[in-house]
Amino acid sequence: MSDDGRVIDRTDVERAADRIAGRVRRTPVLEVEDRRFGWPTFLKLELLQHTGSFKPRGIFNRMLAASVPEVGVIAASGGNAGLAVAHAARELGHRAEIFVPESSPRLKVERLRTLGAEVTVTGAFYAEALDASAERAAETGALVVHAYDQPEVVAGQGTLACELAEQIPGLDTVLVAAGGGGLVAGIAAALEGRRCGVVAVEPVDVAVGGVAADSLGARRVGRICFAVATRTGIRSTLVPDEAIVSAQRMLWAEFRVVAEPGGAAALAALLCGAYKPHPDERVGVVVCGANTDPATVTGLSGSAK
Amino acid sequence: MSDDGRVIDRTDVERAADRIAGRVRRTPVLEVEDRRFGWPTFLKLELLQHTGSFKPRGIFNRMLAASVPEVGVIAASGGNAGLAVAHAARELGHRAEIFVPESSPRLKVERLRTLGAEVTVTGAFYAEALDASAERAAETGALVVHAYDQPEVVAGQGTLACELAEQIPGLDTVLVAAGGGGLVAGIAAALEGRRCGVVAVEPVDVAVGGVAADSLGARRVGRICFAVATRTGIRSTLVPDEAIVSAQRMLWAEFRVVAEPGGAAALAALLCGAYKPHPDERVGVVVCGANTDPATVTGLSGSAK
Image (cartoon, rainbow over all chains, first blue to last red; front, side, top):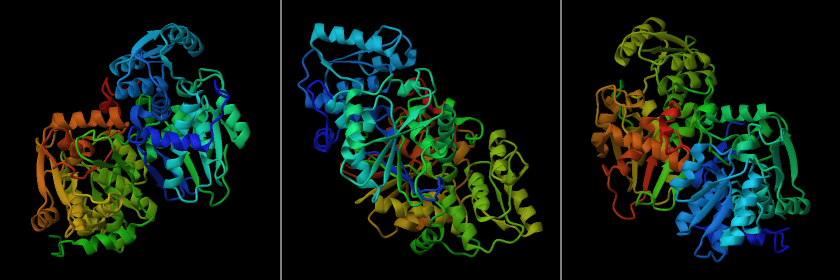
């Protein structure tokens, strides 16, 4: 349910795809041809997207669907959503004000400023930064861009699944990290009515602080995600932190892909057996983000040097 | 010219493609849709290949085209070719003996051993390790796999261009790092007679020791490359080391791709203007290897953390 009481469907995703065309990259798919994982597996390399995550899809859609006032846009996020808001605002010529919690790494804050955003550091946790941004938005009238729980944001994230369905004929299942649920809900809406299941993968440690918290750190799934999940019957599965770290290492060792914990969570579900496909099930795995220090993923055995 | 006096052509590349099918990955292409570089640019992400470089294409072809004796295969390389030889031998169930110079990083040697190869460290430079491996091969009768200057190796590397021509309709030009010339010669042979030019990109500092020396460290282009280049009219261009480092940083900052210097050299030619396409020229850029310490490519501005 959104502020206007509307839950998105496939039409919203298709409209989003038209709206953001040319603004986001059609990210490629790597077929893991050798049954390395036991099933025909396809890695959707969404980490090659602008700003290193899927977030610009939904955020461009939010800004392009709205009438952005002179004062610009406002958002709360010290992570991938913040980067995407700053990037999209710059591309579209809008001012961007971003609220981040004190826990945000200094370098992420600097990166936001490099992208031209005005950054306010406040509150210990995301929820506090979000509240502060809402107060500020009420004062200024800036367009509020939510990191995941707005219909246009969710619809934009769903465009990833439109690409995926075109790129992988006969796709049976999409595995995707849950986080705040914007991506998984968008994907489920995009694929509703097709014969393709969606599995949301969540780290076992749901308290903010596990390895995936940096990117999957939302403390609860958004309302829109909940509504779409209920309607479409998204399945979900849990993965322990260790499995996520293993998946990160394997992505580097086997594919030279640097994935953040949230970006590797979907693959982790396959590797640790949390999700077991049927034989010949064609599985799309969304590798949705790369915003981490590469040194954390290479380990010793993964590095060739 | 090869030992049997034969220079390869497109038929050899097509045969290689059949031979190695299922052994190597069809690596994806990322379209840089937004004219970020001024021209329609396509990144061939060959760094996602097994062992992190294009090398397995040619090396699988060499092993599969030959009758490998019980004693196995032998090669000299402390770099990407060595990794590919060890990987291919393990996949095909052959013994592998690999000679590396003393300058090889310890971790690369360990990685070869992890892949099951028997490693001999000898000689200060590659040429000495190569001589030692040739002496040893004469004693044992092992199948010699050259890093770049054998017809089957060159033909196998050329299979990358068969994929590229399918993946990019209307491709005008391929930019590719030169190194020992195996890849560039294979690509030129594959594309001979089509309306697609090949540009070999070489670091300015040709002495072993520049930033790209680790992967492009061959001190001269192989005989086969020279012969194919003469016949097909490969163009070439030089790029300074600084441009290669910039290209590495940009690949991380814009695409979250970790490229080794040799892997970034082709893009460097576009970025520094060493190669200037015509307007609307459709340019394929081969990002051919990732075997580097990621810490070296992220810089400060590139990292999001």
